[in-house]
Amino acid sequence: MALDFPNSPGIGSVFTDSTSGFSWKWDGTVWQSYSSATASNIQVLDNISGSFNGSTTSFPLTVSSTSVSPVNAQQLEISVGGIIQNPGVDYTISSSNIVFTTAPVSGLTFFGKLLG
Image (tube, rainbow, N blue to C red; front, side, top):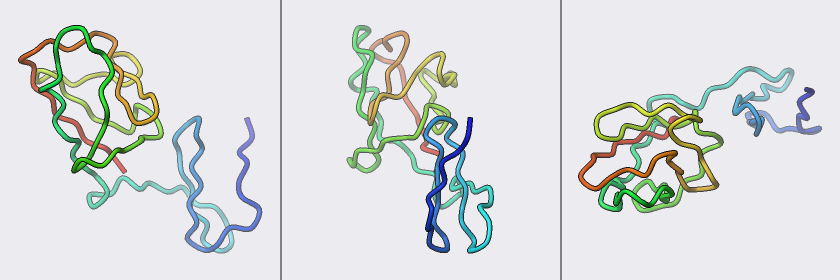
């Protein structure tokens, strides 16, 4: 699979492959591997546990009440009921929603981080 980098990037431009989620940054000469998941870019997701009811599987992802759309499930670190969830197995991403494989039941806790 070939990557389709922009033809005329500006210095500091970031290209993210939508399939893999990997990013590269243009330094003016070459594209260099880039990770935006620095400590300053890690954001805590709003708590969605109040909506857990044992039948709903899809929940909006927000940070400070603002919708966020991760590139892929691996960009999140999710805990439900104190158990770390496996991206792509226990949950997937659909636009700005997290979709759990099994609907979380009422009373379970939620904690999530958006990594970059």
